[in-house]
Image 1 (tube, rainbow, N blue to C red):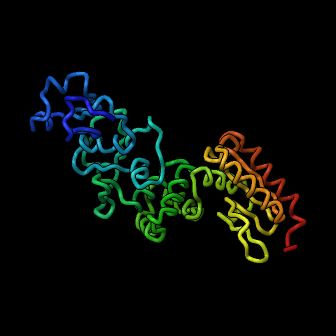
Image 2 (image 1 turned 90 degrees about the vertical axis):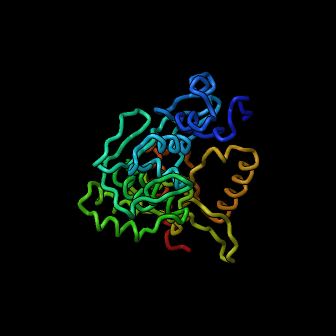
Image 3 (image 1 turned 180 degrees about the horizontal axis):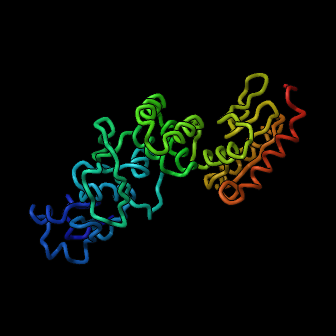
Length: 302
């Protein structure tokens, strides 16, 4: 992005305190009040051309929240790389009950107890640790959203499940801990995308026997035919989630080649989209259930 001629390099591409910029001589109050700058929080500004992502909003929020408050919940999960929030998602802040934050629609405050081991710094921002982030999201978010975060943190080798279990045991009376324990038992580090997690949870909640995650289909010789999102190897059923990345011509060609190889190996493959997982849930469950029933005679044939 080309900088405006009156944009000091120190202020380009980030949020800053307006008063600090004026005190340091980088801007005058008149310049700050002009059309080149956008006020996003009290005394917090960015250049009008800068498109803020959620991390930018988190960084901006830390300039306005009081000491002791940190980025938490879904926002901390995004900073740890577990989720990509929607543009309209407010910044979630965890704050000790002893302090109070000014109301702002762009900040969602969770008043809580923050112990010394609950807070850390990541890429210059104060936020809840991975374990405390998982603890909070797992207790408060919807089941699917919570499991997406747990899966992603495990997949990125950031979350120690035993450390989270210890945190749960030490705070067993906190709201939502029993649900979190059950979700942690469902979490799987092998899940590679949020929609794969949602599809797996949909089937588990519907009573479908759990499938093997990221299962490698191999021939008797050991040659790898392909890796599938979910598998019931005893009946040779594979279930796959197809996201937008499968729409390119090259990826489509690879998918067809892989699908043919799986079929030649004797596997049945069901493929689902976001529409199937999010809005055609009953139909999706029925398809998988019917396929398992139809293939049941194959069980034990090797």
